Image (cartoon, rainbow, N blue to C red):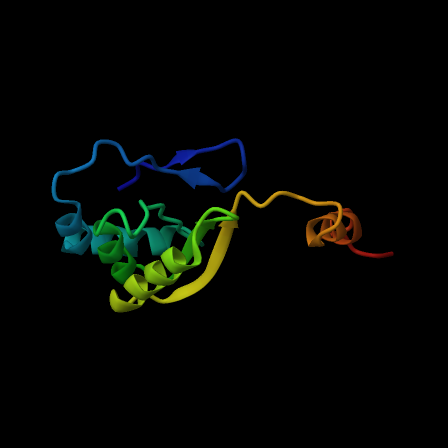
Length: 130
């Protein structure tokens, strides 16, 4: 149960997947896996599980049904809208609670919101004014 490894960042741990079992879907639905998730919930503030794309592997839908929340990750300017919509439908069909979308590969632009955010908010974020 305690295979988590520490990182250079305080209170950040990770666990690598290791060898993939033959019947991943059955593992995700097993009482042992559900118990492991419950153990992690008692041990850690947040748990992030990474999985393959839901359109590529059905195991992801099974995992989505077991966890509390799902964030759909899409590649900016690459993932087609119909693919993202289909992924959302599959998550919904699996009973997943989708809480948001993460856009991966977004390029910072001096004309867009990224520039404004970094210049206006980034420097003083988390500090207290005197």
